[in-house]
Length: 223
Length: 136
Image (cartoon, each protein chain N blue to C red):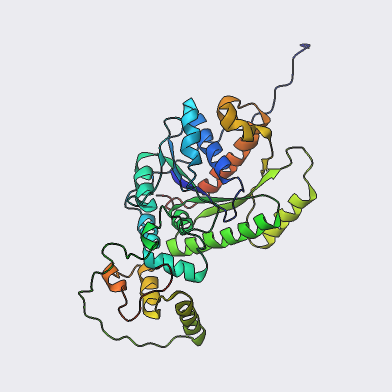
């Protein structure tokens, strides 16, 4: 169906947590999903191995012999969806992954460094789109926002700043919650194990927006 | 009226994933990605500032002093001269990138042509006049 990449040239923005949740949400909805881990720390495979529902998710890891493009080709032939998690830097993998993608999500916390990294990442997606000569859906996702009802001033400020710079921002944001930090320790993944929780519903709203972006792509763009 | 019944919680509508075919193995995106993985492409991206760090696992051929296997292959096709006029700001950028990265103007142009779909073979991307300084 699609190749989805989480990219942000600044580290620590939440790419891996979002990749974990995206894979879990696909599994919870009965989708056939695989992942590619381009973070040398290999967080995805380690995490999935501990969660019974995710233990069979195929996680591809490149090395000197197996390139990203070849791995993605193989995964895409076997699975409906491939989720790619990148290292938090502008690496040689960044544009390769973007050129492969149907959808790129740019997580951004609310610091200026995240904003600058988010804009740089956005520009890289635009370049990848020009090189690939096909549309690549994309959006910034505000992360570690207040999980309460009140939206802090800085979040609204940054949403406007991104929009002024030409970057689309998802309406939903990924709220700061302890449960996301505890996932690895508790082996408890809200999208799988507690779908009625606020955390799971928060992520489901993000996920539905992501699917909406994919659905809006021209029909032949992800063929 | 029934008493004690709670109003049900709000449920988001189920949105099925869009029905799209899997990405076919011959999809052009994989060729584009392969081109972006080539050493010349990475050097060009470094020169342009798009790449600021190398993943040692996926850029192994670019690290260290050894040229990757096959790098020394000589071209078998004769080269011909091509002369054209371009805007001066384009030439200035090409020269600046050459100064920054050591990737010759010839190779910058050939690589751009390959990304645009023109066949340019690997062995013809070795410029024997000057080897790239960056990432060698």
